[in-house]
Amino acid sequence: MKLIVGLGNPGLEYSLTRHNVGFMVIDNFAKKYNVNFNRQKFNGLYAELTINNEKIILLKPQSYMNLSGEVVSKFVNFYKICIEDILIINDDLDLPLGSYKLKQSGSSGGHNGLKNIELHLGTKNYKRLKIGISKAKNRDVKDYVLGHFSSSELEILKNIIEYSENILDDVLNYKFDKVMNIYNTKNEV
Image (tube, rainbow, N blue to C red; front, top):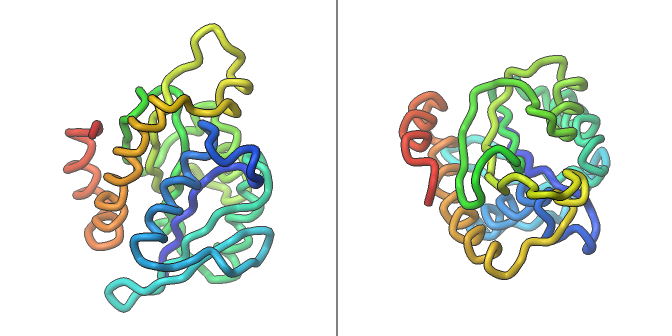
């Protein structure tokens, strides 16, 4: 069993904000497989699908970003999911808009959602798909990540969201280090 988590904040007011890129990516992936987030458990919306006879849970925590780890850890414990079978999709200020990076593990980089996941899982050794949102220029970081994308930024983001379908399919079908080597050499759409 695998768990793919898209990070974001619940509520319509956050739907097209920079911090909700994880929700956007996982929503698009669910749409590809014609599954809906119509199940609720442990303060998370989730969908299930099967790929290569393996159950995949797609999860959108419905707590605010800085409490995402509580939801993730409840799913991990309930379903007895191994840490190596978790992939977290999150926004990243240090990557340019329209780029991505796969990581095997690492620090939170100041991302409050990742900090909380590390706290509740007790490890930094989980896989990530980081989606670039660029750095805030002359803006408070909190205001920036909770700010909405402009229409031109959404056009750029649309490409990476669609491209992420391929990345997620390959993550589910091949060894992560192989996928990481392939995609991280390009890391821009």
